[in-house]
Length: 137
Image (tube, rainbow, N blue to C red; front, side, top):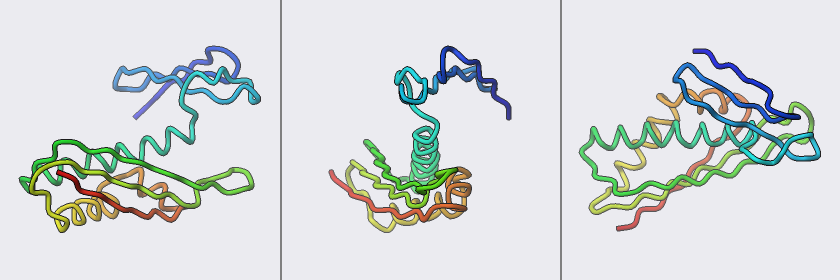
């Protein structure tokens, strides 16, 4: 896996990954950014949420559980001192669909975060990851 980042202006970068997709990363104006894109640590949270979300949807699909919609909300606390790593992350999964069983959702979340999601494996090295979920029809 490879990616290349090109400085656009100040501390704003455009990244081109092996997939051929571009992503813009930025930071606050006080750090010479344009405040026009997601920051690196926000990207880590986005990666964690999408990684576990993809796993969970695929696991539930294999279980023949129909999901109409999934929203994932993440909140994190960072260390006070540099390198200001993540210390606590809470992931809330909000599922919509008919006949979704709690035991299936719990199993899918557990499998994703403990076994399949590589981003969770990395984040878990510095942060406590907690979860909650909600199911609505």
